[in-house]
Structures are given as structure tokens and as C-alpha cells.
Image (cartoon, rainbow, N blue to C red; front, side):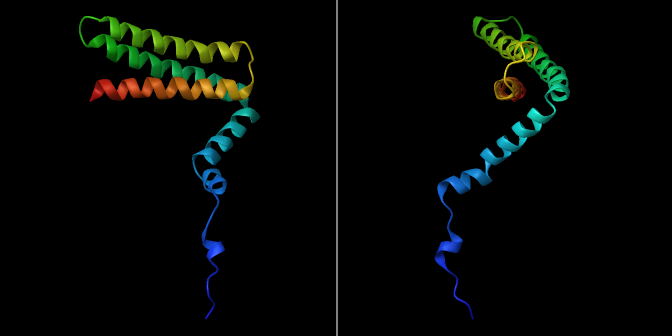
Amino acid sequence: MDVLNNTDLTHSDSERMENGPLKTYNNLLAEFKKQQMGYAAIAIIGQSCLGSVAVMLLLMHGRPKVVEMFVVFLITIFCMAFNASILAQLKSKIAFNLLILSVVFSFSVIVAYLI
């Protein structure tokens, strides 16, 4: 019967991070870089529609307040920042990070107003 070596069961922190969200992020970024023009066109449509839904939900809740209008402003800024990064042909990583920021913010607003 073989005895397991304790070093085989442990991982360093960097290896754990590389197997988790960071690895997924790096894989998605590499794919985005390979086909940036195609993914950019799809992403512009998708994140703009998602931002529009978030703004619609905000404005459907009655008379807009200052806080709600500020959130509308932020959604618009994040969506337009990604769109501008594509038009200005910024580095892939910057555009990808702006896409993630825009989608996460719009999605969180949608979830907050549906609950």
C-alpha cells in the first residue's frame, strides 16, 4: 500500500488562483483577443440591450429621483465607455475589462430592481 505524499495534496496560492476565476478570466480574454472584431460587434449589441433594460426598469418605478438618475448616468457612462473603447481601437484587455464592468453593473441593477 502506497503512502500519499503530503506535498501532492497541497497547492500554492498562485496555483489555486490559476485554477479558479483568474484562469477563466485569462481564457476569456485570450479568446476575445483572437476574434476581437467579431466579439466586439456582438458585445456592443448585447451590453447595450442589457443597459437599456436596466434603465427601463429604473424609470418604470414611478417618478425618477436624484439617486435613480445618477444610476442611469452610470449605466450610460459604462455602456458608452465600452462602445468608445471599441471605436477607438484600444487594447483588447481594456475593452474586455470595460465590457465586464458594464455587464456586471447593468445586471446588478436589473437584479436589484426585480427583487
